[in-house]
Image (cartoon, rainbow, N blue to C red):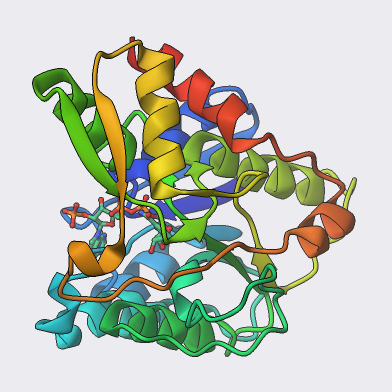
Amino acid sequence: MAIILVTGASGQLGNEIKVVSKNFYGYDFIFTDIDTLNVADVEKIRAFILKNKPDWIINCAAYNLVDNAESEYDKALMINGTAVRNIAEVIRGSECKLIHFSSDYVFDGKSNVPYKETSEPNPQTAYGRSKLAGEKYALIHHGSMILRTSWLYSTFRNNFVKTIIKNASEKRSLNVVFDQTGTPTYAADLAETVVNLISGVIRNQIAFNAGIYHYSNEGVCSWYDFAEEIVKETGLDCKIYPVLSKEYPTVAQRPFYTVLDKKKIKENYNINIPHWRTSLKKCIKHLE
Ligand SMILES: NC(=O)c1ccc[n+]([C@@H]2O[C@H](COP(=O)([O-])OP(=O)(O)OC[C@H]3O[C@@H](n4cnc5c(N)ncnc54)[C@H](OP(=O)(O)O)[C@@H]3O)[C@@H](O)[C@H]2O)c1
């Protein structure tokens, strides 16, 4: 029976993988989080992997506090970079496959066409630099697949969708930036894609091709458009006003454009990706 280790399983994506895993029989999922398996602890991770001998590792553990990373880069790098190296070094040269996640923030946001896997990363934030370091470390193992994703949300944990619902329930109007363009990703869609992919490879239905891939939902929007749609779908009585990023400065300046080109994953793995509006509807239904 294939053993699938999931780290950081109490986060948005890890929780969605738990949900999806219930529909897959014949696999031994081991869900861990920082309290049971701290990926930054090199000795613990080595001992855990050698003892449990996973066939697959889905590394959902991450440091995602984009603003805080500017002042605690060491911590961000430890979890997003060094910890990935810890995992990759233990499984290096083995048949164990690593699925690791990275971010659209590895790009500088100066493009006006979707970023491909071959586009040059140029992170402008400490968070982006730590995620790029993680990509490089993951790739020291020949069996690593990196999925760069963007604007992740879920019914679990805190995220933009939940923040807008909360704020729009309490206020008559909200200001949301309209000069940052990207694509939201429902973590449940990403979770399903990952588990389907693993299952397809195990059953010899598809070939595993290591390397970097982009995955978000389909479509393009600004945070303003996203907020408008959330309010529309939930029926909340709140007006959303578009504002410029410079009117709401953050510690870490977000990239202006991070739409990801998903042709590679769609062609390699023959997957259909839902439009972000369709997936948002689904998530809101789950939240009701
Ligand atoms: N969220 C986004 O908008 C976004 C965008 C692009 C890419 N991504 C990437 O997508 C992946 C999944 O993101 P997500 O939103 O599901 O993240 P998340 O909700 O922040 O979950 C990350 C999990 O990792 C845990 N963790 C932190 N340090 C750890 C350690 N040393 N050892 C083990 N576990 C640890 C966290 O625990 P605590 O909560 O206790 O810290 C949390 O449960 C990540 O690689 C992330 O960088 C996310």
